Image 1 (tube, rainbow, N blue to C red):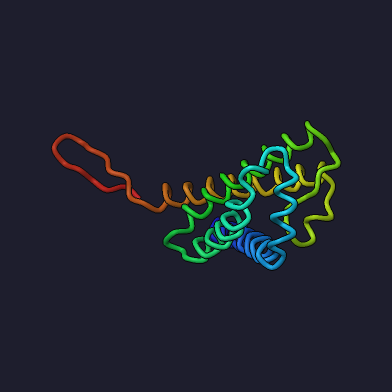
Image 2: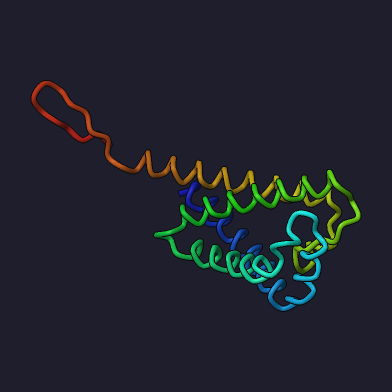
Length: 154
């Protein structure tokens, strides 16, 4: 029960994060695209990323909302947070004066704060996945074999 509540809270945090940032990027699409164009890493792909990333964030939020797909949504969240974290670290290694294309109030964070924030959410996603997998392992029957009989152990 406690695991389920923690998983739900983490999923809700990611839903809020991804809906907020995705919608913010779509609402300020031209600004988001212009910021991406200034990026030494994302510049050549700015047109695709400017539409694709916010839509992906919203899609992941929807996937997290559906319990049957929640584990896949958590994996997608983990992957996206790892990619975001690597991206920020690469940007910081080039310069700390680059514009942030995060969307919303997250633009107010410094690059170091972004790294901390991303690492925190990456850790939350990994923890939720671990808890989810633990709950599957403890709730599903395990089969043992003794001589000629197979028995189910719960």
